[in-house]
Amino acid sequence: MWLSLCSAQGALSPFRALWAICRCLGKCRDVTPAASVEALGRRWQTVLAAVTIFAVAFTARLYPMLRGGGLYGLGNYDDGVYYAAAAMLTEGRLPYRDYLLLQPPSIAILLAPFAAIGSILGDPIGLLVGRLAWMALGAVNALLVGLLLLPVSRRAALLGGATYAVFFPAVYSEHTVLLEAPATTALLISLLLCRPTGRSPRPGLVRLALAGAILGVAASIKIWGVVPVLVIVVWLVVTHSLRGALVYLGAAAAACAAICLPFFLAAPARMWRMVVTAQLGRDRSSTPLLERMIDIGGLSLWGNASLSPYVAVLLVIGVVCVGATLIFEPTRLFALLLVALVATLMLTPTWFLHYSGLAAAPAALVIGGGAHVLISKLVGLTGGRVWVGPILSLVVLLLLAVHASPLLKESMSRAFPGAQLGRALAGLRGCVATDDPTTLIEMNLLRRNVERGCPLQIDLGGNNYVLPHPGKQLVSRANNPYFQRFFLHFFRSHQAVIIVNYREGRDLSAQTARIYKSWPDLVRIGSDVVKIPQP
Image (cartoon, rainbow, N blue to C red; front, side, top):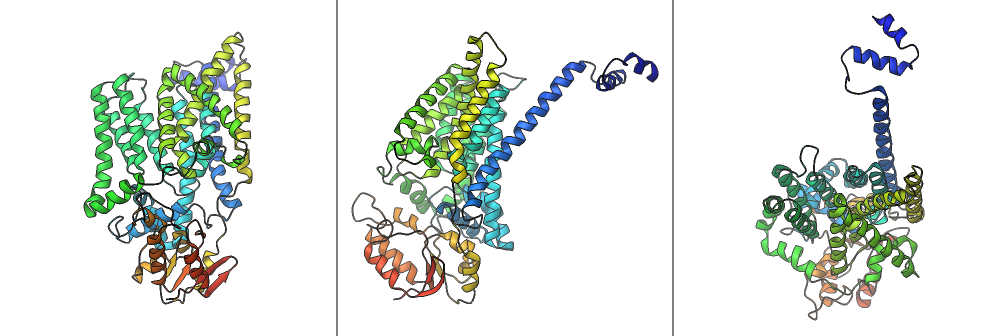
């Protein structure tokens, strides 16, 4: 049999002969050799694209950290706050009851495994592993964007995933342990569960309940997570059923409550004040709308001078992509989410650069889906020429590369001699205070402070949102005499202090700055100084 088979396949390639053998053995009877080769090629192309997107996304988040102060450097202030909150949680201290935390509790829970690593290997290692994990999570988010767009087309998946991989709002919000990365993951997974499957044009109630519960977790990471929940609920009312929408909403509320309720019961008034009242009471005129648009559009690294024309161009592109995704039913929800989240960012009281990461995933979905729709229309206008689509896709990828090119010169952390300062302060018998908890983490002194019963403040600056103010309107730390007194009292309750972020006029009043500068130096390494507070 084998000889006759081989002679019959003599004119065929070895692969086709092998395929004929498989058919004789009863394998793959319903697929032709040509179709199998084509399917295999598509599969490998998809795998190669996914690996490339993951690698590019991870590198885009890692490189600016290494180019700056490295993975042990000082970066975004909030990452130190969140890691310190997780470390305190592993030590049995609860947020709101035992220390100030201006965000819902899930970030402390998510970072607890890395804080547990820090309790064994040292907090500098714990934070480093956490930062690498967040970068990897950002790369996974880029793959999830592509996966969401894969039913639209492979072109849409490639362009959407590539956009998210290098889009600066996503890169910045995922280069260290900030809130936006896990919140984005929850949103994307929830969207995946809500989309139709091959078996049913509408997701079942079990899938909707799971999707709602996952997005409810996002609301327990940052209260803005309520916005996409409401958008999807309205979408389900229109496209699915009222029952499905209520199941989704109920699951989201139940998941959020299950996480937040234990902390709320431990300190209800303090948690409400920190998470809700303090957020809503922030200054609403701190950042112009144009600057917010620059950040949301990923133009922050291009410099703010004379960027208005570029913002206008981005707005036109954005409107065109949103319009294209709105007329294309499979991508319509992405456009609605983008509009809702951008509106949220425009209305939020205060503004920090990483806030723009909230809309990064919907933006990438809209760009990928919108580009697919527009390219398909242009291919149709050219008479269906097959080479037009790949060329236009390549043009979009080149534009993305140009848009992201300033990342090559960006530094997202500054060097900090944490290990050296930690060794220098190893023999200190008292407590060490700081304006940035990352310094205590990198000096590996955070838990030593706790063991010695030192006053616990993981977010010193955040106290300005809960302390009294001289007038009804919130003022800056430097202009709030209550915060200045609190600041000096806190530092004087320690035996050594280090300031790395606070500046005169922005955080410290002129009088407070003079007092701090008058204190004698204990240790000085480069520009970083540890001082001895005086009565």
